[in-house]
Image (cartoon, rainbow, N blue to C red; front, side, top):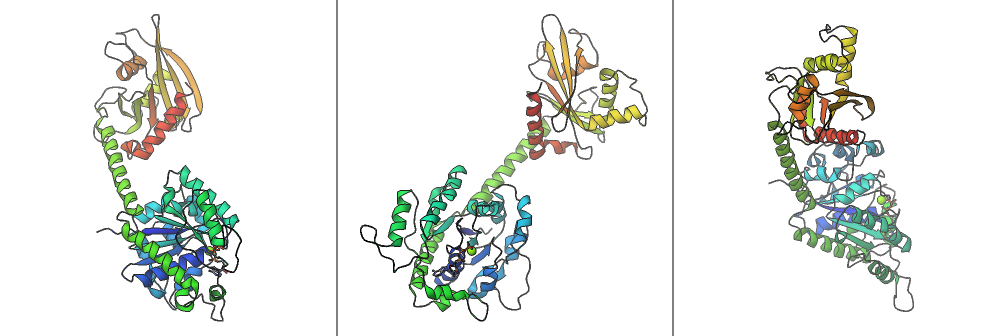
Length: 454
Ligand SMILES: Nc1ncnc2c1ncn2[C@@H]1O[C@H](COP(=O)(O)OP(=O)(O)OP(=O)(O)O)[C@@H](O)[C@H]1O
Ligand SMILES: [Mg+2]
C-alpha cells in the first residue's frame, strides 16, 4: 500500500521563538513515545541545526531538501538519523530554487507522492515566503510557537493566509514557548502563558493544552565544546520542559493516530481524480475533431503535415488544417498573390513564417443586405497585427472565404452562427498536443484575450 506522511509544520514569522527547538525535540519525543511510528524531519532553513542534531558521523549524504523540491522521491532522501529519527539533509541553495516554485501546492504534491511513512515534521524559516506557504499548505497540523504579544500579533498573517486559501483554521495550534515561569501578574491572568492563551482565544486562535517553559538548561544545549546540539530528551531530563514535551508529543501522537486520511493522501486522491478528468476531457476533444481538413474538406490522411488547429468559439466545430493548404489560402484569398509560389520563394517563406507564429480569426457578419467576414491576425501573445474585411458570397455562392466560414460557422438553415473561428498553429510533430489540458487552457486564455479585442 502507498505510504503518506502525516505532516506537522512548525512555523512563525517571528524569529527566535523556539521553532527549531520545538521541531527537532518533538521529533525525538514522538519517536521515544511510540517507537513504531516512523518519524522524519527536514527544514527549509539553512542553519543546519537538524543536520547537527541528527546526522551520524561518517554517514554518506544522498541529496538534500533541494532535491526534494526538484522532485527526487522523498523516501529516497530520508537518512537514518540519531535517536531513531530520519532526516532529509538541509540545503543552502534553496533561495536559488524559489523562482521555480510555482504556487503553494507544490510541496503537498511532492509529499503526496513521497512514500514517506509516519510523521514528517517540517521546520520553516521565520518568514511567510513561498516555501513556508508550501509547508503550511501541506500540513495536517501547524504548530505556531508564540513567546510574547509581538509573536502573537505576527501569527495573524498565517491565519489570514489560511482563510485566503480556504484552509481549515482548526489545523493551526499556537504553542506558548519560552515562557518565563518566574514572571507573575496580579489579577485574572496570573502568568505569561495564561495571559497569552487568553489573548489567543479572544482572537479566535486555538492553543495546545500545554506550553514550553524557558529553561536555562535547554538554552545551554546548543553551546558545548563538541559543537553539537543536544536534545532535551537525553540532556534535559528533570526539567519542566521535558514533561512539557512529553505532553506535546502525546497530543501530536493522538492526532496522528486519529487521522485516517492525512492531507497527503487526500491530495493524491484529488490529483488522480483531476488527472482522470483531464484525460477524459482530452479524449472528448480528440473524438470531436473533424476527420477532414477544415479548409479544403479533403480527408486528412495518415502522415498529413498538420500545422493548424481550428476551433469555432462556440466549440461546435474543431479540426486541423494542413500547412500547405493554409499557406495557399493565405496567398490566394487574403494576400491575393500567386498561390503556386515555390516553397523557397522569399514571399512564400515569409507567409509560412507568419502562419506558424500567428493566430488567425475569421469573424463573420450577416445582415439583410450583405454578408462579410472580418479577418484578423494576432501574435501568439495576443497582440493585434492585422484586420481586413472580405465580402462573402450570398448563400449558395462559393469562394474560399465563404466555403471556410459556411463549413465551420454555418447553422442549420444556411445562416451563420453567432461565433468566430480561430486558427492556431500546432507543433507538426504532435498536433494533438494542443488538446492536452494545459496547452488547451493556454489557447482558451489567448482566445479570451483576442475576443475582447474584436
Ligand atoms: N525552552 C527554551 N528555553 C530556553 N531557551 C530556549 C528554549 N527554546 C529555545 N530556546 C533558545 O532560544 C533560541 C531560539 O530558539 P530556536 O532557534 O529554536 O528559535 P527559532 O524560532 O527556530 O529561530 P529562527 O527564527 O531563527 O529559526 C535558541 O538559542 C534556543 O536555544
Ligand atoms: Mg529556526
